[in-house]
Length: 242
Image 1: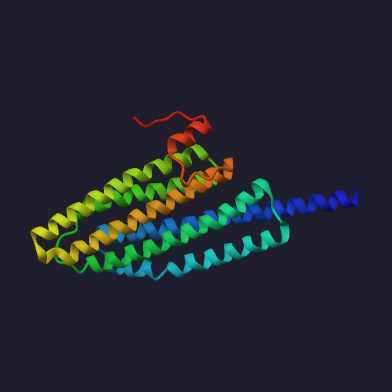
Image 2 (image 1 turned 120 degrees about the vertical axis):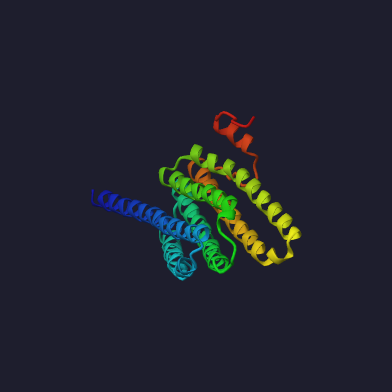
C-alpha cells in the first residue's frame, strides 16, 4: 500500500511538472505577443522611442527560453518520459526555440521601426506592411491558442494561413523594387520596408512551426514535409482548398 501511495505521489508530481512547463510556454508566448504588438505599433505609427524601448526588452524572452529549456532537460534526465509525455516535452523544447526566434524578429522589426521613423515621408504609405503584420500577429495568436487547447484542427488552419503571408510578402517586395527603380532616392527607405516585411514573413514561418508541433503533440505525426491535403485526409478532415 505504501509503495502504491509513493507511486501515485511520483505520478502526481510528474504531471504537475509537465503542466508547469506547458504553462510556461504559454506565458513566454504571451510576452512574445506583447513585444510583437508594440513593435508593430511602433512601425505603423512611426514612433522611434517606442521601437527602441521594446527592442531593449528582448532579453526577457531569452531568459524564459533558457529557464524552460533547463526544466525540460531535467525532466528528460530524471523522469524518462514516454509516449505522449515525451511528445509534450519535445514539443515544448521546439516551441520555445521558435518563440525565441519570433522575439528576435520582433526586435529587428522594432529597430527598423525606429529607423523608418526618421524618414521624411509619411507612414500612411505602409498600409500593406500593416496588413501583413496583422495577419502574422493573428497566426502567432492562433498557434498559441491551438497549443493551449491542444487543438490539431485549428493548428492546421494556421499552417494553411502561411501561404497567404508568403503571398503578401512577395507583393510588398515587388512593390518596393518598383518604387526604388522609379526613384533611386527612396532605395534606403524601401530597403528597410523590405527587411521589415521579411521579418514579418519569418515570424509567420515560426508560428507555422508551432502549429505543426501541436499536430505532432496530439497525433504523433510529423507534418513538416507533408502536403496539407495528405495530413487532412489522414486526420479525416475535409479539404477546404478550391
